[in-house]
Each structure stands twice: as structure tokens, then as C-alpha cells.
Amino acid sequence: MSNEETRNSLADQAAAWVPPWQRPAPPRDTPAPPQEENLGTEAPAEAPAEAPAEAPAEAPAEAPAEAPPAMPPVSEIAADADAPAAAEDAVVEGTAARVPRKQPASRRRATAAPEPPPELDEAELRGALEAILLVVDEPVSEATLAEVLEQPAARVGAMLDQIAAGYTASGHGFELRRAAGGWRLYTRPEYAGYVERFVLDGQSVRLTQAALETLAVVAYKQPVTRSRISAIRGVNCDGVIRTLVTRGLVEECGSEPESGAFLYRTTTLFLEKLGLNSVDELPPLAPFLPDDVEELSDVTR
Image 1 (cartoon, one colour):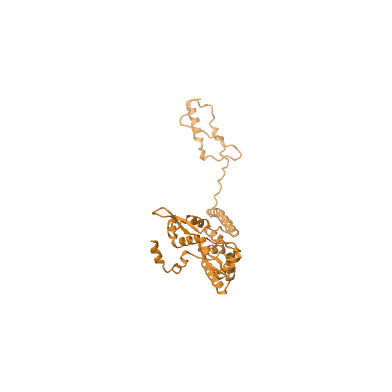
Image 2 (cartoon, one colour; image 1 turned 90 degrees about the vertical axis):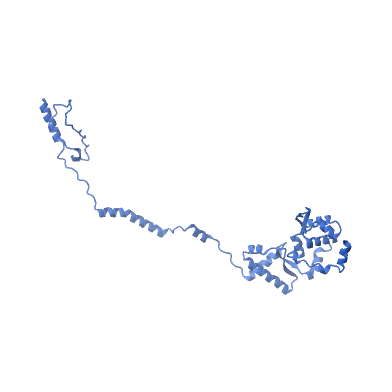
């Protein structure tokens, strides 16, 4: 084939070539035809001269192109987009109607707080206090009684005063007194002889005269050292002090800054045994002193 015929054949092929974006879409059940290579303006040297000019005409130009799917209206798209949200709202509203909302932690704590104990009436409070005071072996404070009975301390104190006044007015053989910072039932002093004969039954548990004198010095002069007690009594009191400490009537309370000697004072057991609330309730010594006390002090000097 001559060069002129070759140029005419390439020109025919170039005129019959259709771009891919203008070609009709192939049917879905048939494989897509292979994409044709772009042809240049110049023919390659090894192009076959015998290629027929009508080859591109066999492309299925008559195949009907499938129309793209029609877009739905904008109103339908908006409706479809709102449908899941409306359904979710419906589910949430239905769930909220069945399941109660979770309360805040502060509100749950407030509702879970224990209810205050019921207030006892006057008769029940009086009976409870009397029952407890009958079994105590040492004075009990108002705060302890209020905690046990779950009642205000002011109300318990007022009731104790009322009970004590009632015992005194009724003339009972016992009385309710405040002693050693608490409350306890005691027998009345006018019946002490009968109680002593019943309890002791011939046994003597009294303190010796030396122990009583030493205990009196400690009670009125506390805190006081052993040397001071011995100077007041005129005799050595080391053994007596040890006896009083063993019985729990006297205890150490530090040391004297100047000499470093131990200081002694009375204990709450001492107040309990005497039925006193504090050492301030001790009777004054002036009525028990002799008339010539000044002369005796001069002779001692």
C-alpha cells in the first residue's frame, strides 16, 4: 500500500473515533469493550497497512443508552432525612414515658438520708433514764445518756433535774445527784447507818486515821508534793501516799518545776465516793480548826 493510501486510512480512522465520554453505556450483562488507545497525528511505523477502514464502524453505535436514574424531588429528600430523626424522637419519648429519669447524686443522697429518731414522750424518757441510772456503776454524763437515748442533751439534762427534784420532794431513801461530772443514784445521808450495817456486816473497810489526814491534805492543798504533806502532818507520809494511790483515791499529776518532786491530786473516784461534783464543793476548814490555831502555828515555828 502506498503512503497516500496509508494516510487516507488513518484519516478515516481518526474521523470515525468517538471519545469515551460520548460513547453509549454498554449493557449490564455484557462486558465493557476495551478502551481504545488515543491515536496521534502521526502513524507508527509498524502499523498494519491492511487494516480495513470500516473497522470502527462496527462499534455498537445503535445500542440505546440507559438513562440515568431520575433524581427525587427535594421535598422527598428532606422528608426522608427527617424520618429517622422523627422515629428516634418517638422512641426516646416512648422510653422516657416508661423509664424514670436518673436523679442527680445530690438528690439521691438527700432522699437516702436516715430519718431522725422519734422524740420520746415525757413518761418514756423518764423511765429510760431511771432504768439506766439503776445499773450504772459510776456517774454517767448527760452527753452519754443523750447519745444512748438519741435525744437532745438539753432535754435530757432538764429531765434529770426534774427527776432529782421529784425524789427529794417525795422523801425517798435515795436521791439523784450530780457527782464527778455525771449523774448517779445515792442513798440519803440520814439512812447511811442502816446501809453501812447491811453492807459491811462487821467488816471494817475504813481508812486509817493517817490515811484520812493525808487524803484531807491532798484534797485541800492539791496539787501538793510529799514533802509538803509531811511538813503539814509532821510525820513521813510515803507509805500512806502509796496506799492512797493503790486504792485509786490519789494520783500523780506532774512534777514541781523548782524541785522536780512529784505532785499529787485527788481522783474522780474520790469525788464519787464523797458524792461531790468537784473539789470546790468541799466544806470549809475554818469551822473545824481549834481556837488557838495561831498559837499552835507560832509554837511550830
